Image 1 (tube, rainbow, N blue to C red):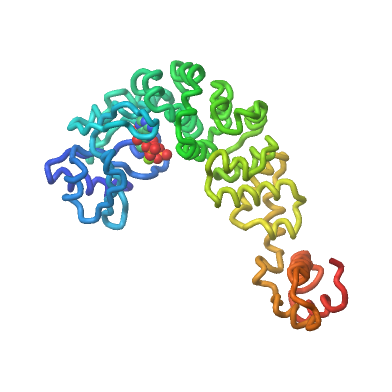
Image 2 (image 1 turned 135 degrees about the horizontal axis):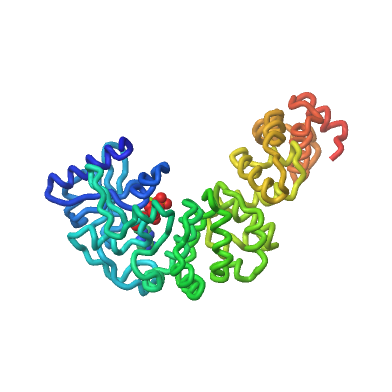
Length: 389
Ligand code: ATP
Ligand code: MG
Protein backbone atom coordinates (compact mmCIF):
# COMPACT_ATOMS: atom_id res chain seq x y z
CA UNK A 1 0.00 0.00 0.00
CA UNK A 2 3.04 2.23 0.32
CA UNK A 3 2.82 3.16 -3.35
CA UNK A 4 -0.63 4.58 -2.69
CA UNK A 5 0.35 6.70 0.36
CA UNK A 6 0.44 9.99 -1.49
CA UNK A 7 -2.71 9.20 -3.47
CA UNK A 8 -4.45 8.41 -0.18
CA UNK A 9 -3.39 11.80 1.19
CA UNK A 10 -4.85 13.46 -1.91
CA UNK A 11 -8.06 11.50 -1.33
CA UNK A 12 -8.07 12.46 2.36
CA UNK A 13 -7.77 16.09 1.36
CA UNK A 14 -10.91 15.73 -0.78
CA UNK A 15 -12.74 13.97 2.05
CA UNK A 16 -11.86 16.78 4.46
CA UNK A 17 -13.75 19.06 2.10
CA UNK A 18 -16.77 16.78 2.25
CA UNK A 19 -16.28 14.83 -0.98
CA UNK A 20 -15.92 11.13 -1.67
CA UNK A 21 -12.75 9.85 -3.32
CA UNK A 22 -11.52 6.49 -4.57
CA UNK A 23 -8.58 5.04 -6.39
CA UNK A 24 -9.87 3.48 -9.63
CA UNK A 25 -8.88 1.83 -12.89
CA UNK A 26 -5.62 0.10 -13.73
CA UNK A 27 -3.91 0.87 -10.43
CA UNK A 28 -6.49 -1.01 -8.36
CA UNK A 29 -6.54 -3.86 -10.88
CA UNK A 30 -2.76 -4.23 -11.00
CA UNK A 31 -2.48 -3.94 -7.22
CA UNK A 32 -4.98 -6.79 -6.75
CA UNK A 33 -3.17 -8.90 -9.33
CA UNK A 34 0.19 -8.16 -7.77
CA UNK A 35 1.64 -6.45 -10.82
CA UNK A 36 3.59 -3.22 -10.73
CA UNK A 37 1.23 -0.29 -10.70
CA UNK A 38 1.27 2.44 -13.37
CA UNK A 39 -0.48 5.79 -13.17
CA UNK A 40 -2.79 6.48 -10.26
CA UNK A 41 -6.29 7.63 -11.18
CA UNK A 42 -8.61 9.05 -8.59
CA UNK A 43 -12.39 9.35 -8.90
CA UNK A 44 -14.28 11.83 -6.77
CA UNK A 45 -17.75 13.21 -6.13
CA UNK A 46 -16.28 16.74 -6.32
CA UNK A 47 -16.95 18.63 -9.53
CA UNK A 48 -13.86 19.81 -11.43
CA UNK A 49 -14.24 23.39 -10.15
CA UNK A 50 -14.51 22.06 -6.62
CA UNK A 51 -11.35 19.98 -7.07
CA UNK A 52 -9.63 23.13 -8.31
CA UNK A 53 -10.61 24.86 -5.09
CA UNK A 54 -9.19 22.10 -2.92
CA UNK A 55 -5.68 21.99 -4.44
CA UNK A 56 -3.17 24.68 -5.32
CA UNK A 57 -1.73 23.26 -8.49
CA UNK A 58 -4.37 22.02 -10.86
CA UNK A 59 -4.21 21.70 -14.64
CA UNK A 60 -7.59 21.33 -16.36
CA UNK A 61 -6.44 18.65 -18.82
CA UNK A 62 -9.87 17.34 -19.77
CA UNK A 63 -12.24 19.46 -17.83
CA UNK A 64 -15.16 18.92 -20.23
CA UNK A 65 -15.04 15.23 -19.29
CA UNK A 66 -14.51 15.99 -15.65
CA UNK A 67 -10.77 15.36 -15.49
CA UNK A 68 -8.15 17.61 -13.94
CA UNK A 69 -4.50 16.94 -13.20
CA UNK A 70 -3.41 17.72 -9.67
CA UNK A 71 0.24 18.23 -8.76
CA UNK A 72 0.70 17.14 -5.18
CA UNK A 73 4.06 16.79 -3.44
CA UNK A 74 5.84 16.63 -6.82
CA UNK A 75 3.57 13.92 -8.19
CA UNK A 76 0.68 14.10 -10.64
CA UNK A 77 -2.74 12.60 -10.13
CA UNK A 78 -5.59 12.53 -12.59
CA UNK A 79 -8.74 13.29 -10.69
CA UNK A 80 -12.01 12.62 -12.49
CA UNK A 81 -15.47 13.47 -11.24
CA UNK A 82 -17.86 10.51 -10.92
CA UNK A 83 -19.80 10.47 -14.16
CA UNK A 84 -21.98 8.53 -16.50
CA UNK A 85 -21.67 8.82 -20.23
CA UNK A 86 -24.09 9.57 -23.02
CA UNK A 87 -23.67 8.26 -26.55
CA UNK A 88 -20.45 8.65 -28.49
CA UNK A 89 -21.48 10.09 -31.83
CA UNK A 90 -17.89 10.96 -32.77
CA UNK A 91 -16.58 7.73 -31.22
CA UNK A 92 -14.00 9.67 -29.35
CA UNK A 93 -15.74 11.59 -26.66
CA UNK A 94 -19.17 10.99 -25.23
CA UNK A 95 -21.69 13.61 -26.38
CA UNK A 96 -22.38 14.61 -22.86
CA UNK A 97 -21.07 13.54 -19.53
CA UNK A 98 -23.31 13.66 -16.60
CA UNK A 99 -21.73 14.09 -13.21
CA UNK A 100 -23.12 11.84 -10.51
CA UNK A 101 -22.57 11.49 -6.78
CA UNK A 102 -22.40 7.72 -6.64
CA UNK A 103 -19.26 5.69 -7.32
CA UNK A 104 -21.28 2.69 -8.51
CA UNK A 105 -22.75 4.69 -11.39
CA UNK A 106 -19.22 5.77 -12.30
CA UNK A 107 -17.93 2.20 -12.25
CA UNK A 108 -20.79 1.14 -14.53
CA UNK A 109 -19.42 3.22 -17.42
CA UNK A 110 -16.06 1.43 -17.36
CA UNK A 111 -15.09 -1.15 -19.94
CA UNK A 112 -14.15 -4.43 -18.24
CA UNK A 113 -15.12 -5.63 -14.77
CA UNK A 114 -11.45 -5.93 -13.74
CA UNK A 115 -11.22 -2.19 -14.44
CA UNK A 116 -14.38 -1.35 -12.54
CA UNK A 117 -13.18 -1.76 -8.96
CA UNK A 118 -12.72 1.22 -6.65
CA UNK A 119 -10.62 1.35 -3.49
CA UNK A 120 -10.98 3.88 -0.69
CA UNK A 121 -8.05 5.17 1.33
CA UNK A 122 -8.51 2.43 3.94
CA UNK A 123 -8.11 -0.25 1.29
CA UNK A 124 -11.85 -1.02 1.28
CA UNK A 125 -13.05 -2.16 -2.14
CA UNK A 126 -16.19 -1.14 -3.96
CA UNK A 127 -16.75 -3.92 -6.45
CA UNK A 128 -20.35 -3.98 -7.70
CA UNK A 129 -19.52 -5.93 -10.89
CA UNK A 130 -17.49 -8.70 -9.27
CA UNK A 131 -14.21 -7.54 -10.74
CA UNK A 132 -12.27 -9.42 -8.06
CA UNK A 133 -13.96 -12.65 -9.03
CA UNK A 134 -12.99 -11.99 -12.66
CA UNK A 135 -9.38 -11.49 -11.54
CA UNK A 136 -9.58 -14.72 -9.59
CA UNK A 137 -10.86 -16.55 -12.68
CA UNK A 138 -8.61 -14.60 -15.03
CA UNK A 139 -11.48 -13.38 -17.17
CA UNK A 140 -12.13 -10.23 -19.13
CA UNK A 141 -15.83 -9.53 -19.02
CA UNK A 142 -17.47 -6.32 -20.18
CA UNK A 143 -19.40 -4.31 -17.63
CA UNK A 144 -22.87 -5.05 -18.93
CA UNK A 145 -23.80 -6.23 -22.38
CA UNK A 146 -20.81 -6.55 -24.75
CA UNK A 147 -22.78 -5.51 -27.81
CA UNK A 148 -23.95 -2.25 -26.27
CA UNK A 149 -20.62 -1.44 -24.68
CA UNK A 150 -18.68 -2.06 -27.91
CA UNK A 151 -21.20 -0.10 -29.93
CA UNK A 152 -20.87 2.81 -27.53
CA UNK A 153 -17.11 2.85 -27.91
CA UNK A 154 -15.60 0.28 -30.31
CA UNK A 155 -12.11 1.02 -28.98
CA UNK A 156 -13.09 -1.29 -26.11
CA UNK A 157 -12.60 -4.23 -28.50
CA UNK A 158 -9.00 -3.25 -29.05
CA UNK A 159 -8.57 -2.56 -25.34
CA UNK A 160 -9.83 -6.08 -24.68
CA UNK A 161 -7.13 -7.55 -26.89
CA UNK A 162 -4.60 -5.28 -25.20
CA UNK A 163 -5.59 -6.59 -21.77
CA UNK A 164 -5.35 -10.17 -23.05
CA UNK A 165 -1.78 -9.35 -24.03
CA UNK A 166 -0.90 -7.74 -20.71
CA UNK A 167 -2.72 -10.10 -18.36
CA UNK A 168 -3.05 -13.37 -20.25
CA UNK A 169 -6.73 -13.52 -19.27
CA UNK A 170 -9.52 -15.11 -21.29
CA UNK A 171 -11.80 -12.74 -23.12
CA UNK A 172 -15.38 -13.65 -22.38
CA UNK A 173 -17.16 -15.64 -25.10
CA UNK A 174 -19.91 -13.07 -25.64
CA UNK A 175 -17.34 -10.32 -26.13
CA UNK A 176 -15.43 -12.48 -28.62
CA UNK A 177 -18.54 -13.09 -30.65
CA UNK A 178 -19.52 -9.43 -30.79
CA UNK A 179 -15.92 -8.58 -31.64
CA UNK A 180 -15.94 -10.91 -34.60
CA UNK A 181 -19.33 -9.94 -35.99
CA UNK A 182 -18.93 -6.20 -35.36
CA UNK A 183 -15.23 -5.77 -36.02
CA UNK A 184 -15.94 -3.11 -38.64
CA UNK A 185 -17.07 -0.78 -35.84
CA UNK A 186 -13.39 -0.30 -35.13
CA UNK A 187 -13.15 1.73 -38.34
CA UNK A 188 -15.12 4.48 -36.63
CA UNK A 189 -12.34 5.08 -34.17
CA UNK A 190 -9.56 7.63 -34.65
CA UNK A 191 -6.51 5.58 -35.54
CA UNK A 192 -4.40 7.44 -32.97
CA UNK A 193 -6.49 5.91 -30.18
CA UNK A 194 -6.13 2.45 -31.68
CA UNK A 195 -2.35 2.94 -31.93
CA UNK A 196 -2.10 3.70 -28.20
CA UNK A 197 -3.69 0.34 -27.46
CA UNK A 198 -1.53 -1.40 -30.07
CA UNK A 199 1.59 -0.05 -28.41
CA UNK A 200 0.57 -1.56 -25.08
CA UNK A 201 -0.56 -4.74 -26.83
CA UNK A 202 2.77 -5.42 -28.51
CA UNK A 203 4.68 -5.12 -25.22
CA UNK A 204 2.49 -7.55 -23.27
CA UNK A 205 3.85 -10.82 -21.91
CA UNK A 206 1.02 -12.67 -23.66
CA UNK A 207 1.33 -10.88 -27.00
CA UNK A 208 1.25 -14.15 -28.89
CA UNK A 209 -2.15 -14.99 -27.43
CA UNK A 210 -3.33 -11.47 -28.24
CA UNK A 211 -2.17 -11.74 -31.86
CA UNK A 212 -3.99 -15.06 -32.10
CA UNK A 213 -7.14 -13.33 -30.86
CA UNK A 214 -6.70 -10.52 -33.42
CA UNK A 215 -6.52 -13.28 -36.00
CA UNK A 216 -9.37 -15.48 -34.75
CA UNK A 217 -11.80 -12.62 -34.18
CA UNK A 218 -10.64 -11.19 -37.52
CA UNK A 219 -10.12 -7.82 -35.90
CA UNK A 220 -7.10 -7.33 -38.17
CA UNK A 221 -9.58 -6.81 -41.01
CA UNK A 222 -10.44 -3.48 -39.42
CA UNK A 223 -6.81 -2.38 -38.97
CA UNK A 224 -4.97 -0.20 -41.52
CA UNK A 225 -2.46 -2.04 -43.74
CA UNK A 226 -3.27 -5.37 -42.08
CA UNK A 227 -6.57 -5.44 -43.93
CA UNK A 228 -4.78 -5.30 -47.29
CA UNK A 229 -2.27 -8.02 -46.39
CA UNK A 230 -4.23 -11.07 -45.28
CA UNK A 231 -1.22 -13.29 -44.56
CA UNK A 232 0.52 -10.81 -42.29
CA UNK A 233 -1.34 -11.64 -39.08
CA UNK A 234 -0.53 -15.36 -39.45
CA UNK A 235 3.15 -14.62 -39.97
CA UNK A 236 3.17 -12.53 -36.81
CA UNK A 237 1.24 -15.10 -34.84
CA UNK A 238 3.66 -17.90 -35.63
CA UNK A 239 6.67 -16.26 -34.07
CA UNK A 240 5.52 -13.36 -31.91
CA UNK A 241 7.28 -12.51 -28.67
CA UNK A 242 6.96 -9.48 -26.37
CA UNK A 243 8.38 -6.35 -27.95
CA UNK A 244 9.66 -3.10 -26.49
CA UNK A 245 7.41 -0.72 -28.40
CA UNK A 246 5.68 0.32 -31.59
CA UNK A 247 8.86 0.94 -33.57
CA UNK A 248 9.78 -2.73 -33.23
CA UNK A 249 6.28 -3.80 -34.21
CA UNK A 250 6.36 -1.56 -37.30
CA UNK A 251 9.83 -2.74 -38.36
CA UNK A 252 8.67 -6.36 -38.14
CA UNK A 253 5.38 -5.69 -39.93
CA UNK A 254 7.26 -3.85 -42.68
CA UNK A 255 9.51 -6.88 -43.21
CA UNK A 256 6.65 -9.36 -43.20
CA UNK A 257 4.27 -7.29 -45.35
CA UNK A 258 6.59 -5.63 -47.85
CA UNK A 259 4.92 -2.29 -47.04
CA UNK A 260 7.53 0.35 -46.28
CA UNK A 261 8.04 1.80 -42.81
CA UNK A 262 7.01 5.33 -43.96
CA UNK A 263 3.77 3.90 -45.37
CA UNK A 264 3.01 2.09 -42.12
CA UNK A 265 3.71 5.25 -40.19
CA UNK A 266 1.46 7.28 -42.49
CA UNK A 267 -1.50 4.89 -42.29
CA UNK A 268 -1.24 4.58 -38.52
CA UNK A 269 -0.46 8.31 -38.03
CA UNK A 270 2.55 7.52 -35.88
CA UNK A 271 5.19 9.93 -34.67
CA UNK A 272 8.41 10.85 -36.38
CA UNK A 273 10.45 9.21 -33.67
CA UNK A 274 8.66 5.88 -34.20
CA UNK A 275 9.36 6.30 -37.90
CA UNK A 276 13.07 6.90 -37.41
CA UNK A 277 13.49 4.04 -34.97
CA UNK A 278 11.49 1.62 -37.09
CA UNK A 279 13.47 2.64 -40.14
CA UNK A 280 16.79 2.03 -38.37
CA UNK A 281 15.61 -1.37 -37.08
CA UNK A 282 14.25 -2.32 -40.48
CA UNK A 283 17.58 -1.68 -42.22
CA UNK A 284 19.48 -3.42 -39.47
CA UNK A 285 17.33 -6.54 -39.82
CA UNK A 286 18.30 -6.72 -43.47
CA UNK A 287 21.99 -6.05 -42.98
CA UNK A 288 24.83 -8.28 -41.89
CA UNK A 289 25.83 -7.92 -38.28
CA UNK A 290 29.11 -6.00 -38.49
CA UNK A 291 30.92 -3.05 -36.95
CA UNK A 292 29.59 -0.61 -39.53
CA UNK A 293 25.93 -1.63 -39.16
CA UNK A 294 26.07 -1.68 -35.35
CA UNK A 295 27.71 1.75 -35.42
CA UNK A 296 24.82 3.10 -37.46
CA UNK A 297 22.19 1.71 -35.12
CA UNK A 298 21.47 4.08 -32.20
CA UNK A 299 22.58 2.13 -29.13
CA UNK A 300 19.20 2.44 -27.41
CA UNK A 301 17.82 0.21 -30.17
CA UNK A 302 20.23 -2.67 -29.51
CA UNK A 303 17.78 -4.51 -27.28
CA UNK A 304 14.97 -4.07 -29.79
CA UNK A 305 17.15 -5.33 -32.61
CA UNK A 306 18.01 -8.43 -30.58
CA UNK A 307 14.34 -9.09 -29.83
CA UNK A 308 13.50 -8.77 -33.51
CA UNK A 309 16.32 -11.05 -34.62
CA UNK A 310 15.05 -13.71 -32.22
CA UNK A 311 11.66 -13.49 -33.90
CA UNK A 312 12.66 -12.91 -37.50
CA UNK A 313 15.67 -15.18 -37.82
CA UNK A 314 15.46 -17.26 -34.67
CA UNK A 315 18.92 -16.02 -33.71
CA UNK A 316 20.24 -14.87 -30.37
CA UNK A 317 22.55 -12.01 -31.32
CA UNK A 318 22.74 -10.31 -27.95
CA UNK A 319 26.32 -11.26 -27.12
CA UNK A 320 27.53 -10.44 -30.64
CA UNK A 321 25.93 -7.00 -30.65
CA UNK A 322 27.36 -6.21 -27.21
CA UNK A 323 30.84 -7.38 -28.24
CA UNK A 324 30.84 -5.44 -31.50
CA UNK A 325 29.50 -2.29 -29.84
CA UNK A 326 32.05 -2.45 -27.02
CA UNK A 327 34.88 -2.67 -29.56
CA UNK A 328 33.76 0.27 -31.72
CA UNK A 329 36.64 2.78 -31.91
CA UNK A 330 34.20 5.69 -32.27
CA UNK A 331 30.50 6.01 -31.51
CA UNK A 332 29.47 8.98 -33.60
CA UNK A 333 30.77 11.13 -36.39
CA UNK A 334 31.80 13.84 -33.94
CA UNK A 335 34.28 11.40 -32.40
CA UNK A 336 36.29 11.31 -35.61
CA UNK A 337 39.70 12.95 -35.19
CA UNK A 338 39.21 15.03 -38.36
CA UNK A 339 36.61 17.50 -39.54
CA UNK A 340 35.28 18.52 -42.95
CA UNK A 341 37.47 21.61 -42.70
CA UNK A 342 40.58 19.42 -42.49
CA UNK A 343 39.73 17.75 -45.77
CA UNK A 344 39.26 21.12 -47.45
CA UNK A 345 42.62 22.33 -46.17
CA UNK A 346 44.38 19.18 -47.34
CA UNK A 347 43.11 19.74 -50.89
CA UNK A 348 43.47 23.52 -51.33
CA UNK A 349 43.01 23.30 -55.10
CA UNK A 350 39.68 21.50 -55.02
CA UNK A 351 36.38 23.32 -55.14
CA UNK A 352 33.95 22.56 -52.35
CA UNK A 353 31.55 19.81 -53.34
CA UNK A 354 30.12 16.43 -52.55
CA UNK A 355 33.62 14.93 -52.47
CA UNK A 356 34.02 16.27 -48.94
CA UNK A 357 31.04 14.31 -47.67
CA UNK A 358 32.09 11.19 -49.54
CA UNK A 359 35.62 11.36 -48.21
CA UNK A 360 34.38 11.98 -44.75
CA UNK A 361 32.12 8.96 -44.88
CA UNK A 362 34.90 6.79 -46.26
CA UNK A 363 37.16 7.88 -43.41
CA UNK A 364 34.42 7.27 -40.86
CA UNK A 365 33.80 3.77 -42.19
CA UNK A 366 37.51 2.96 -42.33
CA UNK A 367 37.93 4.00 -38.70
CA UNK A 368 34.82 2.13 -37.54
CA UNK A 369 36.03 -1.00 -39.33
CA UNK A 370 39.44 -0.61 -37.75
CA UNK A 371 41.22 -0.30 -41.07
CA UNK A 372 42.81 2.93 -39.90
CA UNK A 373 43.34 4.36 -36.40
CA UNK A 374 41.35 7.41 -35.36
CA UNK A 375 44.35 9.68 -35.53
CA UNK A 376 44.54 12.92 -37.47
CA UNK A 377 47.98 12.36 -39.00
CA UNK A 378 47.23 8.80 -40.00
CA UNK A 379 43.92 9.84 -41.50
CA UNK A 380 45.61 12.62 -43.45
CA UNK A 381 48.19 10.24 -44.82
CA UNK A 382 45.45 7.77 -45.75
CA UNK A 383 43.40 10.45 -47.47
CA UNK A 384 46.30 11.98 -49.38
CA UNK A 385 47.77 8.68 -50.52
CA UNK A 386 44.74 7.25 -52.09
CA UNK A 387 42.18 5.52 -49.99
CA UNK A 388 40.21 2.62 -51.32
CA UNK A 389 36.77 4.13 -51.26
P1 ATP B 1 -3.05 1.20 -17.84
O1 ATP B 1 -2.46 0.38 -16.77
O2 ATP B 1 -2.50 0.89 -19.18
O3 ATP B 1 -3.10 2.67 -17.55
P2 ATP B 1 -5.86 1.34 -17.37
O4 ATP B 1 -6.87 0.26 -17.13
O5 ATP B 1 -5.59 2.25 -16.22
O6 ATP B 1 -4.57 0.66 -17.91
P3 ATP B 1 -6.52 3.71 -18.82
O7 ATP B 1 -6.58 3.90 -20.28
O8 ATP B 1 -5.50 4.43 -18.02
O9 ATP B 1 -6.39 2.13 -18.60
O10 ATP B 1 -7.97 4.03 -18.25
C1 ATP B 1 -8.25 4.09 -16.85
C2 ATP B 1 -9.59 3.46 -16.55
O11 ATP B 1 -10.63 4.19 -17.24
C3 ATP B 1 -9.75 2.02 -17.03
O12 ATP B 1 -9.26 1.10 -16.07
C4 ATP B 1 -11.26 1.93 -17.22
O13 ATP B 1 -11.90 1.76 -15.99
C5 ATP B 1 -11.61 3.31 -17.74
N1 ATP B 1 -11.56 3.39 -19.21
C6 ATP B 1 -10.55 3.80 -20.00
N2 ATP B 1 -10.87 3.79 -21.29
C7 ATP B 1 -12.14 3.37 -21.36
C8 ATP B 1 -13.07 3.15 -22.41
N3 ATP B 1 -12.73 3.36 -23.68
N4 ATP B 1 -14.30 2.73 -22.08
C9 ATP B 1 -14.65 2.53 -20.80
N5 ATP B 1 -13.84 2.71 -19.76
C10 ATP B 1 -12.60 3.12 -20.02
MG1 MG C 1 -4.29 3.93 -16.29
